[in-house]
Length: 283
Image 1: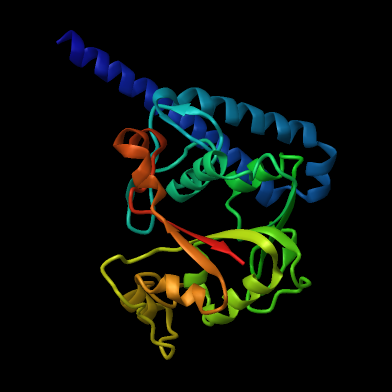
Image 2 (image 1 turned 90 degrees about the vertical axis):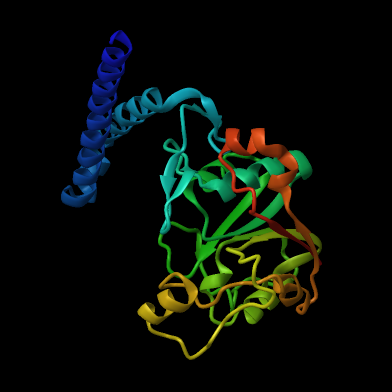
C-alpha cells in the first residue's frame, strides 16, 4: 500500500511540473505572437527572464541518470517519443535533438577532427541542437543553408548553390535529399563546392529491404506521396542502391553502420537508432 501511495504522489508532482512547463511555454508563445518586435527589443530582459525560468524548470524536471544527450550534454531520466510514426526514446526534451543528431555528434567527436581542426562547414537544414553546438566552436566557420527555412544564414537551392567551386572543408546533409526532386543534381552541387581533400556526411531515411530506390516522378500530390513514399513531403524511398547514386557524381563513398558498433548499452543510453547509417563522402 505504501508503495502505491508513493507512486501516486510522484505522479501528482510530475503532472504539476509538466503543467508549469506548459504554462511557461504558452507565455513564450504569447510574447512572440502578440507583442511587437519593438516591445520585445526594449523589454528583452523580461523575455530573457521568462526563457531562463522556463529552461530551469525544464532541466530540473527532465534531469536523471538513465540517458545522456550527446548534443546538449544533459543527463536525463528519459528521451521522449517523437515522429510521424511515433518512435520511443527519440527526442531530447532539453535541446530537441533526435537519434540521428546524437549519433552524428558521437561520430564526429570520436572518429574525426571536426571539433579540433579549423574548418569551413556547410550544413543543410540544420536542427537547432546541432546549430547551437556548432556555432559555439571557434574552429568552425559555420554556414547554414536551405531554400525555405527562415532561421538560416544563406538561402539556397541545393540543386543550384550560389557558392564557388571547392570552398568547403566539410558538408553535412542529413535527411534532406528525400525531399529533393532532382537528387542527382543536388549531389553534383555538393561535389562541386566541396574541397578536393574535403569530406561530407549524408544521412537519409533508408529502407534496407529495398535493393533499389523507389520513385515515380509523376507523383506530385501530397496525399499520393503519403501513400507511396510514407510522407507528404517525400519524393522517393531510398534503397540499398543509394551508395551507387552518390558515387555516380564522383564521390568516394564509405557506408558506416556506426550505431551498431557502439553496442546495445550505449544505443539505449544515448537514445540511438541501431539501423541509422552514415554515407561518408570524400572527393
